[in-house]
Amino acid sequence: MSRRDSRTNKKARTLLRLRPLLLASAGAFALSGCQYHVLSPQGWVGDQERNLLIISTLLMLIVIVPVLIMAVYFPLKYRADREDMSDYDPTFEHSNKIEVVIWGVPILIIVALGWFTYDYTHKLDPYRPLDHLGAGEPIEVQAVSLDWKWLFIYPEFGVASVNELAIPEGRPVNFSLTSSTVMNTLSIPALGGMVYSMAGMETKLHLIADTTGTFPGRSAHYSGPGFSKMTFDTLSMTDEDFNAWVAKVKETGGELTRASYLELEKPTIDEPVHSYASVEDGLFGRIVEMCVEDGKVCMGHMMMQDELGGGGLAGIPNAAAYSYDRARTIDGFGNLIDLPEPEVNAFHEAFLNDPDAICGPDFARTSARTEEKNNG
Figure (cartoon, rainbow, N blue to C red):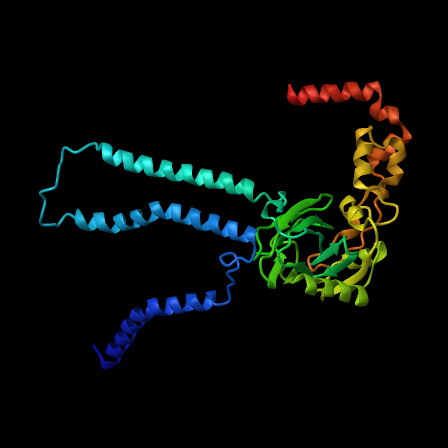
């Protein structure tokens, strides 16, 4: 072997010895930017969720740790080349003690996990108010997920903010959530779990901050090209600071009307923080009902009309009043697409020109024969 080959082999052996250290260093570097709010919560809900996570992990370790130990111990103890073979019993086939352990321990763990899951599921129901904590007066916040930003409306104070959530320390926050377009989730890891926001629906979430500070929040559900920038800061502050924040918003903010909301609703990425000094009455209800625009039929009225049999022939020309998603269609880069106005299709044209041709006896008999032929 040449001297060069010897040096090369020596370097290779050195790298192999250092590989675990290099991998550990790379892993530590990769995790250095992580935030551990879930394990260091700042609110009662987050505390309970952290406790459940720890309890579940410890219960599972009751199985995992012994298995890892036995995976090393038994192959070493009962290897084929061992010298002491006195404990070898070729007639062994059953042990009640082993059966009790391998069946009893998992059953006890499952029972314990089931009990804790049941208890915490009801205790941490996101729709359950936090009145049992005996904390201060709750504050109402109406949260709307937009493309790609968050709107927070404070109905009790008549103000609103975009991409900034201010809450008083030690007081429950009752969230009402909805979405203007696609599904999203409101997530503030330091305070607790997340709940979905969906267009045409209103969901609930109850959180509380036990300390003052700034806690990151975001959407935890992918919703398009601006998803990574759909973040906000949660400012937990004293009652005095919160009242000062509200007063500042009322002095410097604009007006959130139906018209300004429709402008705000248009897709933007990395929207700056701004606020509104006033909010039009009933705006959140119209957002939930998907009828902020003039001339649009609200969801509740639409459902009532469906219950009564629909709009019939007279409703066909009014299709635009029931349309919502077409005006919010975007391309892959988040730009609005101006779609052409829909035209009455051939079925509706035929229906308008000759209803009997579609709903008459001949059509019914033909449909029945076709159904019988297809389904037997």
